[in-house]
Figure 1 (cartoon, rainbow, N blue to C red):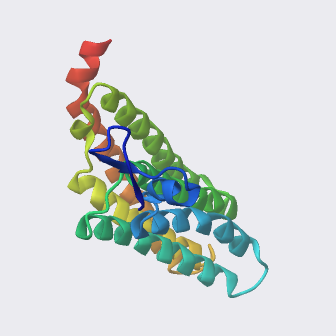
Figure 2 (figure 1 turned 30 degrees about the vertical axis):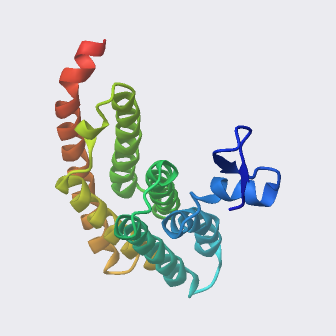
Length: 211
């Protein structure tokens, strides 16, 4: 970046006369981890298109895209920590991208299966994400966001959730292994409720004082 003498002549300040130079600072949030997170959001409309294509290969490819998005979910966090590139923008965007991808996948599967057997755990997972997102924002306003940090239960729930969605997206409902995906999804839904209860118990003393 170019520098210019200040009015006092004894200090230097950034040269803001060149907009191309001055705007470089605003792009600092666009590091590789955040680009991966944005790519995960960009995958969503492609996932929807692949899901509805009337070809035999479209479902496995849609599942593969979802799997790739799941890998970027792990990779962006790993790179942000490894390269010390964590940013407030990334901290905000990463969970948003995760929830969008999962909710869209669940909505697609609800339509495909059209049965309470799959709709019930899907609604449990979606409802939990809404509750915990609101809880984290509320706790952040009180400076207690760490009280609802991700636990090992939440990580296990996320892993099972991704595995179940990968199976269910790849296979038609009539496939014999599709039942395995449903069972894993129910397990993820149970852990979803358990983790939500744990988060609410940890946050309740602070929430009750703010009422």
